[in-house]
Amino acid sequence: MGRFVITGAARREDGRRGIGAALEARLREEGHEVITVDRANADLVADLSLPEERARVVRELHERAADGLDGLATCAAVGGASGSVALVEVNFFGTIELIEGCRDLLRMRGGSAVIVSSHTFVLFPKEDVVDLYMSLDRERILEGVAKRGGMTVYASGKRALVKWMREQVASYAGDGIRLNTVVPGYTDTPLSSLDGRDETAAKWAEDFRSKIPLGQRMGRPEEVAAGIAFMLSPDASFVCGSVLYVDGGHDVNLRPGPIEY
Image (cartoon, rainbow, N blue to C red; front, side, top):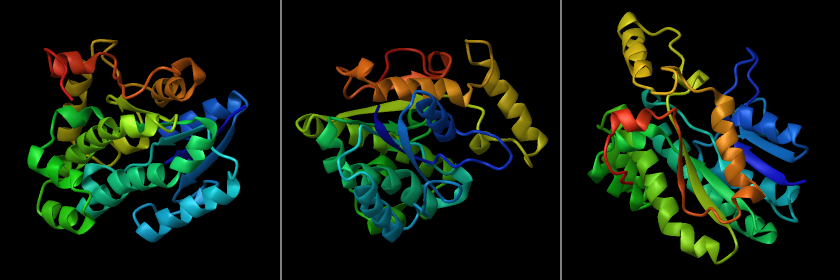
């Protein structure tokens, strides 16, 4: 059996599952060892918005998994209303720094890393903001996004993660590590909850669901987790540098025509 790390896999007290928690449950049911990372209710409790906390997580993973990792899934994320600093630190650097920091552990076992993006990465990004992210200059990025809207910062960061993954594929493959991205569509998670939102938000959500070809419904966390689990598994041994949509066909209606990343 394998050993996997999942960020953003907190076990919520209300019983609701995000994508990371659904993936944890699936991998544990398959008999794998799973190390979860989150702000609470996880094996490694850490605030991934802080560089020093990300560095600590990497150190602790080297202690817990000194003989290597079979896979890493970066599911940790905050939404567009969380503020530009959190979006940059958690969603972007919280993904890249953990993958880079665990590269040697993944190399030991010929493992793989799966970045969880978002279908917003092709809908709402701004190329100048994407370029900022791709500079990997934290101070420059934070200064550049400070006055941009939350959805622009969120979507542009998710697009930058896909670009970063594609740029790193050949280098990581040289170490026997597969990099891939899974793109969830509109999924029923705590992050997408309408609790406390107004009627306008509810109407928007209803309209958005109506454009999903497969059942006009939201996806379930378990459905996205199945896609990530496949990408992490030996069944995907020749899948590398791919972008897998798990969105019920939503992208076809939102963005008809040839796919561009």
